[in-house]
Image (cartoon, rainbow, N blue to C red; front, top):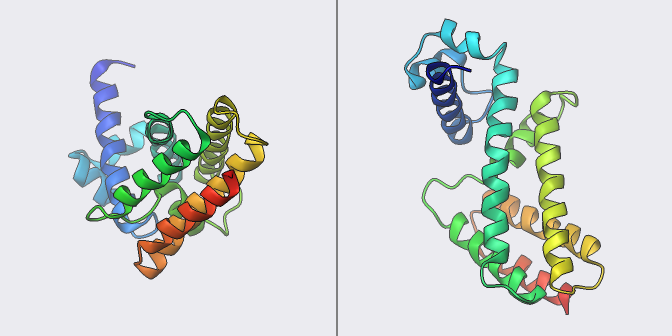
Length: 187
């Protein structure tokens, strides 16, 4: 792909991500995305066949960034299972306390598209969440955790649940409760 086309595609992906994250997939129109990116709708459709394809590309583009961020959260200075857990939930708490935080974009979009089982964005979200579980399994295995795959899934459940309930209730203490529960599982 020529550099100019790559730059155009990147601007569209970034604009779409910002709008989808802030407003939700259904509320954002293609005209609004094209306008935010500084292009015509025709240019947007040159790069993406449909709004659905654009959403899947946005999530696919963000998946690697998100996975790397969570891996960094988990690993930074962590030698034990408990330190991995502490790192994850401490970083999660910092994230949920940031202005304009609206939860995991992957989770929100999967919920928004819950009735569209075959939607390409749901496939990307499912693949991303499975990659997080695999990454956590590998990290926990390296710390010597008992049953690292099972523990990784349990931690992922608490990590996701804490985000969803914090978003629903507007109460960051759900992160603290999930953190404490994850610590109990690891002991």
